[in-house]
Image (cartoon, rainbow, N blue to C red; front, side, top):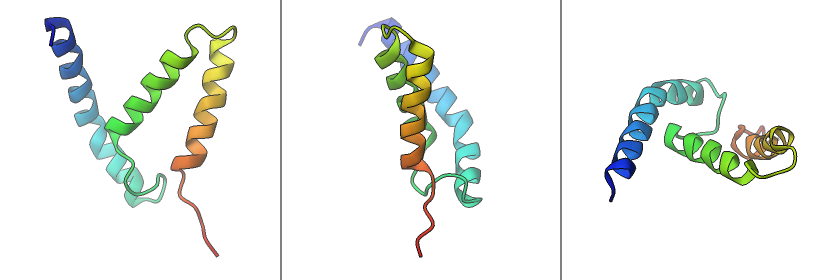
Length: 79
């Protein structure tokens, strides 16, 4: 692994560690589905960013993709 890659992974781990308590609190409050993690959300955002960077309207496409993703991580009420 390159030094640059190692630094990027360290920054991502630090950010995920800082966000973990917030995500756990959101899960306890029912604001996100159980099993959602800060690392998973960071990966999702990174993926959306990379997927839309060359799109003709990257902002609109990122919002559309995030909307699709949110439908998948929001808790569902059955019954």
